[in-house]
Length: 215
Ligand SMILES: C[S@@+](CC[C@H](N)C(=O)[O-])C[C@H]1O[C@@H](n2cnc3c(N)ncnc32)[C@H](O)[C@@H]1O
Image (cartoon, rainbow, N blue to C red; front, side, top):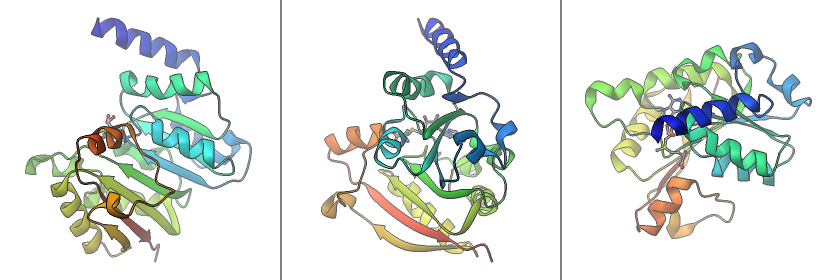
């Protein structure tokens, strides 16, 4: 059953090359050309089944959105949303963001979202955390001056680690944070799939917003 699902995912992804970009490296420095406009480019790493990035794109037609997800079996759910209701300002990329500098040029990205990223709790996996110093260095390369990184998580250990990692960085300044986002929920908040589940379970959601300085 699982194998059939993976095969189905692969086949569907390959049937929609206009929605899921199969060779993202070819678009480095040229994402706006792909969208056929000069609108800002915002990226979610680990978009999962795509609820957040799809609704962002639906609500903000003058922003280009790119959802990056490393598994076919997950990104296919985001693709299904696009097939049902196509959006010109959303592209999906099946890619491991460890190599994100291979697909975006310096200064190419206007904003980055990290929603409920995998916590990788073991010390030996620290480098895989999307807020580890080595990822922050990559973000520094691709993000514009004064651009924002927004993060939400239910995992306090990851949140604390990310606060420290952001705080130790020379080029990132935390400008807002919440230790309980739902105590004072902004009307602009868009729930992710994981967020919906965690909120139902009464889990606390942590939030931070940081500004990136290029020099
Ligand atoms: C816990 S899920 C959260 C999904 C979604 N953001 C949400 O909040 O519903 C984390 C997702 O990030 C993806 N992911 C983790 N590391 C990644 C990486 N290096 N590159 C791309 N996707 C990644 C995983 O495959 C998974 O689908």
